[in-house]
Amino acid sequence: MRPLLLLAFATSLVSSAATLALHEGANNPTTEGWAPSSCCGAVGPFDALPSDLGLGAWAMPVSGDGQAFYTESLTSAERDSALATGWRMTLIARVVSLGAAPIDDDFGAWLYFSTGSRRYDMSFEAGSVGVIDRVFAIRNFDRTEFATDTSAYHRIELIAAPGSTTADFYLDGVLLLTGFTGHTDFVISPGVRISALWGPGQGNIHLAKFEVGSFTTAGPYPPLTGVPEPSTMALTGFGLAAALRLRRR
Image (cartoon, rainbow, N blue to C red; front, side, top):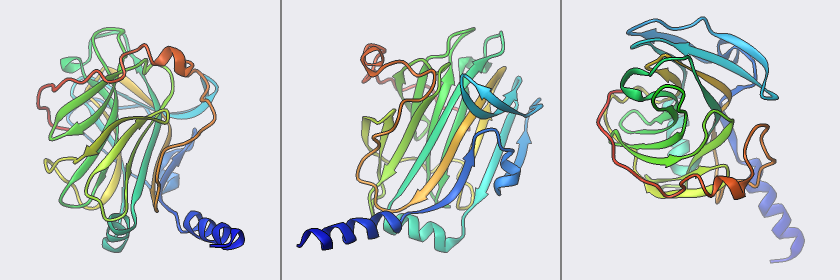
């Protein structure tokens, strides 16, 4: 294939990508098309953070059994397009300790994609008092755990190839898990959902994004403010995996 044709083909692949759900910075998600809901305990007050460690974010505090959600619904056609064409889901966030142990030591800031029959979840989570140290890919609510400092902002992603029912999990552009199958518990109608669950804790959400297209890899991306250098992150336990208890999300 001639160089110009190669360039045109590559450009067509990039231009075919479409963003179906997006939260950015300190914007209130309700102004971006997300529908708010909550249950089971105290949530809020939610607030804009114009500069949190140098990034704009939306703060989602919860207490006790509180669960807070923002949901962007997808049409059946949008869901089908994602499954046929491929998709990428991105969450840039951090979690903040509110001074006490979270319920069952697992406050979390989550993002997931539901097909209507299957869910693909990923999260930043806090452990015991003051310990904020894990990212997760969720498989049948057994968590595959990777240690990192989630009190700083990081980027986690799930990327599914065209026609695939599995996805790859990345942390700051580093591939940590392949063949992620998601799960079929507590599935909602087709859509994308931001969640903050089981405080006390606060999720500061800088970016939540769901895109349709053919994405072969994550990144490369510019460094995020407040993120350790990759050389130090490599020492925080990449590859540490643990199956933990079942818990409804």
